[in-house]
Length: 109
Image (cartoon, rainbow, N blue to C red; front, side, top):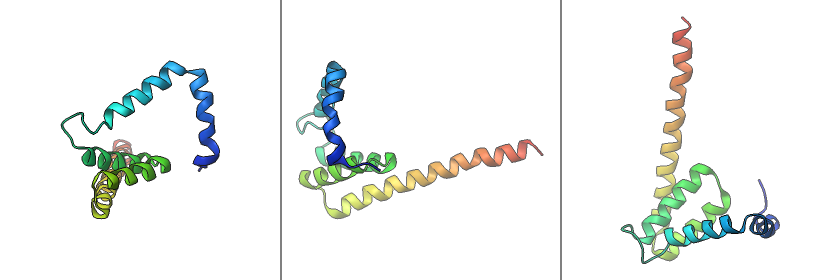
């Protein structure tokens, strides 16, 4: 794991090396989380972000989007439910990938 505070300073190096791409990324991120845009309300988008962050295991995104979800109006229970939905999907993915293990055994019989 890495330290956000110690490593975030290297964003300047990414911006310097790929300024247009970084600008496009931040523009996209801003559009996605624009309170006025889209059909989904901001709480829902932030809760989706929490779930995705849990499955991608990005500790910075988990913390940031959990806080932003609450600021947008989500309850502690809402955030916990988003976490559990993500956990269920991640576990389900483990089961379905397990099918490949079973398939390889059966096909070799």
